[in-house]
Image (cartoon, rainbow, N blue to C red; front, side, top):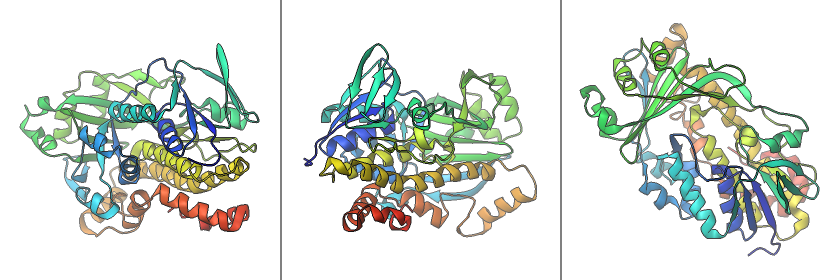
Length: 435
């Protein structure tokens, strides 16, 4: 139990908000989570849990529950769109556990969310549903709720996602997400249906992450627990302005992929229906924190990313773990301002690099046929991985940056420096090992 027991209000019960709730509650503070939906539950299909977030779940004692309903892929496999030719392979099992101390996993998003909800409730986190936030008082601080009494707190954390009201309140004007020009189809098909086709059997014979890279789009497919197969298809956005989600026209979808690998087209033929989502991200903010020292943003509310590195949820979980680690060290409420500044210093450059890296990967995946595409393929086929290698999960420098990060360790090191040197240490960002 910390010497200063505080009340933390978290706006949003997504994966990042729940991770913050668990981390901060474990640090000995009272935590209230405010969620606008009347019933808890995550929409979406599969989600990837890389080693950098799996090690956090392991420390929280949740990894066994996660692994019980997830799959552990053996390899990342990058393919040509034309014929499915394998261009690059990066082992994940057993490599991830041996190299980084935690596995790489696939899980159904609803299962991941359910496990975090159950743990938050077990720890005594108060989750308030059906609460629509209408405003934030940064000085008190407090959160105003439509038709209900306001929530008073010592600190408010805005974890309300891509279309964050908290972000708009912090910057003082509407701040909608940034349009990226891409959309995604997200589909789950029964793996047993794939077994009816000889050409699809290898896709479900063993867990793999298969990517097909092609002009202006790509596909990523992998096996989930419960006999499900996850398919994500990316192509240029044609959803009308003002809409984020639309019903997919399957003929239109098949038309885009008509010249792609016959194996992939057979797989897409199993899709009965789908929605399509406009992919959006955020621009780097000047700051995530209010000058009062009583408010900060977290997750997609401040660093929404394209999903191409499969690190968006992991970054939010890292944010939550970092806050938990820092709040576990707080002995004096007067240090709150410094604590939140330290949180931002630890997290902001790393998440900005991930957001930019995801955008850059689109240029690698979506190359038009030509000299640059041929050189990309040659490098993957003929060269050992190097810094800047097209398969970013095999790039030895970038891979370490992604998977080698330890949120608890970095928070511990930064807090020690802060104790020794005080707030003046914040001027030297090189003190904080975000890589």
